[in-house]
Image (cartoon, rainbow, N blue to C red; front, side, top):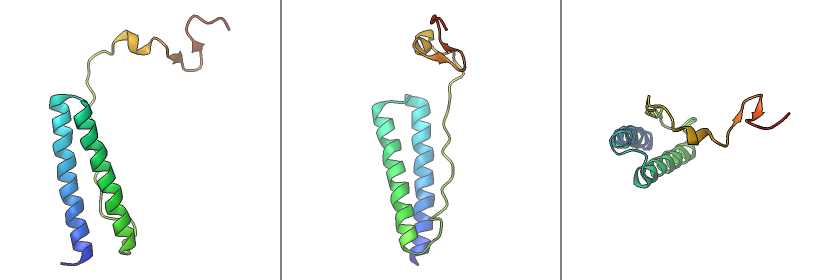
Length: 95
């Protein structure tokens, strides 16, 4: 097996791991532990790309996009309490 083949295999395995962690996140929520796993995956992907560039692979191994699940539930109104309305400024502030 060549270094190129090994990098491609590592990228496929990393994609599988990324999918598993996304599934865990859907089940468990965005916990600190799940976020740490996502950060580790990002670091490994960056390291694989560095190795790929060192080996002369122009763009590194193929990296599929990460699927992020967003709930359809309404946000808690307090989430927006200190937000500015785009183009209108802060609510309750005289202009």
